[in-house]
Image 1: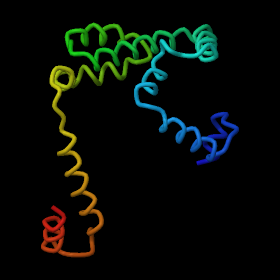
Image 2: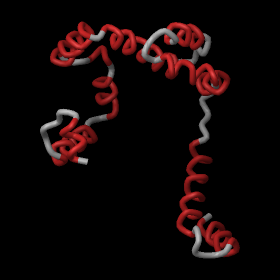
Image 3: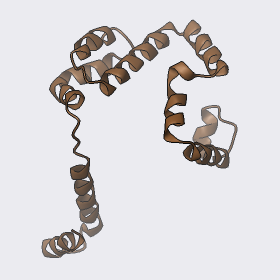
Length: 151
């Protein structure tokens, strides 16, 4: 894991990353979300992005498109999605746009409806974990008993 940091140019250690994450977790949620927004970048980050966009203009387009997609997903107007897909089709995000267009109804539903399947997904994950733990060790009857006891 440490080697993967070094190949990416990171000269610090895991402890540095852990300290940074711990400090980030202590901040209120509202201040964390404001810092992650591109409008509130510090001057050093803005200078870096300007430099990157100067040498790779396609990244500027991709950044703009990704911010627009995030705004569409956070909003409640799914009609903007088709325009985004058309615009992103000729950019670095063409593969993402193609994937969204293949399942456009599900994405529209996620934008328009505020309900979630997270509780169901959590139960499925729990059941699959139990199944993996028991695989090859016992019969279906024991697996069934264990699932019912956990519920």
